[in-house]
Amino acid sequence: MSQRHPKPRKPSLGGLDSEESFLAGPAAEVRALIWSADRHMLVQDFLEVSAARLPNKTALVCGGQRLTYAEVDVSANRLANALRERGVQRGDRVAVCLRNSVPAVVGIFAVLKAGG
Image (tube, rainbow, N blue to C red; front, side, top):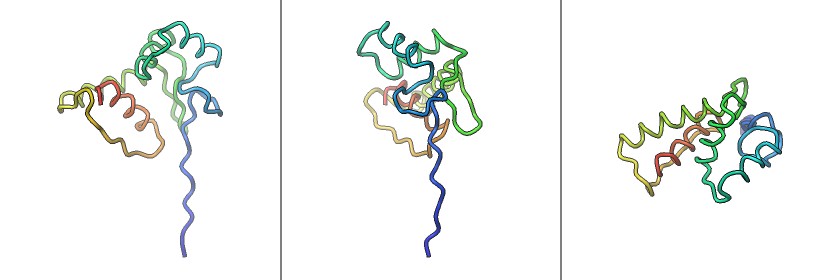
């Protein structure tokens, strides 16, 4: 007899229920932020621009945990620096194997920032 496991809760990004935006903020604000910068902005650059422009805005909500753009950026930078210290370079492949969670999102940003 197989046991049913509850489906892991997907992180809600900025309280948005839809998947139209990767990071939080009112949709118009996010679109304005994207279009005010280079149209070909990398995801990690979008986080940095968001952290500079909207540091105290909620960027990530997962369960009872809420992080601002600045908090996500600082955490991702800290982990990216640790990855670089361990030899991760641009173009390296780095696996992130975590359930949908705050550490998973931070880990993905960190890998991108480290160049992996």
